[in-house]
Length: 148
Image (cartoon, rainbow, N blue to C red; front, side, top):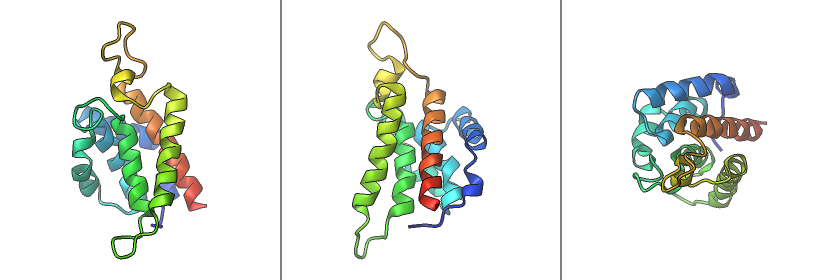
């Protein structure tokens, strides 16, 4: 497991940074991953490029929310023991499920299109900025627990 700098995981500060990134045109996955990257020793530019295709529910397909994908990408970086003799996949999957489960419980779904109200006359359940806030809050909490 990588070192986690919990001093960089203040939820309000991270949510503000992610909102700024999103306002600059970052997709939801990029906004989350780039915000959390410094706390786990990942270069934000690398996080940005790796998560470029995850926005709008995976390449614009409105499937799994990009904010969740960004948080899951960070968990993979933190937990992975590398390519030589990988043994950490199960732990990473468990954390990924926890993030998705908590997000789904808070928002009733993890599907981007449903969150955005695509094909619904009821409108969106949650805005992209709201989804980013939720993913940041959950991921910060999970990372802090890991660091204990």
